[in-house]
Length: 303
Image (cartoon, rainbow, N blue to C red):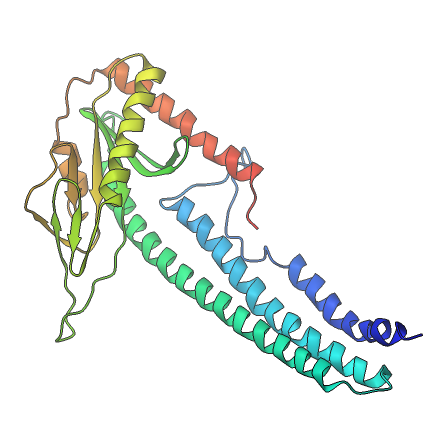
């Protein structure tokens, strides 16, 4: 029976299959989320959304690094089994096994490089968000002074990095991490020119950060108006940690800063009329909204 020549070599794949099962069972080993012992909700810190994405990136790196050798060896092991049970050696078949192994090696090398670059970008973004969050914590004074800071507030389609509530308005804060390019002498270029619709970095320009900050502040203004029944003064803030901001033609509806002295800037900014009753309704609404993210994370575990 010729079909046995193709079926029996599968026996040699059993150890590789068992190892793959163990790897899949351990894929969530790098899960740094901590839940509260009081209500089982996930404890959130500044940049928690990026922390979760970083956990998933490390999980992907673990899977690709551990499953890669197993998958690459599978055609080779199967081909060795075929050599034992086959009566006639078909060199074209062995060449196909070799090409398949080579293709799988290239595929997993690409996946590992992608995971490494993704983790590098996420770690840079997390470092910037932590720096901004630490600066915002300076806003929080004793209870007699109603300053509140919320992190990772979910909107309908995206997550807002930070929201600061002061006695004079609500600030929607977006953080963007960008690496500094080097000049011909190897010195980092740190100056970014701000225009109304774009940011001009050394060597490239971007419109999306300004557009995203406007989108976040607009959504927050409309949502608070529906939730609180009053018009709430809201302003967007874009933070570019580590950059020197050159305000050539600054937008009138946004604040563009590098994060230094951010707490003092927000505490001194007066956006408009914002009485105590509206202030309390805003903080209660944001507290309820922040709790939605915990529910979404429980419904969508990391993979």
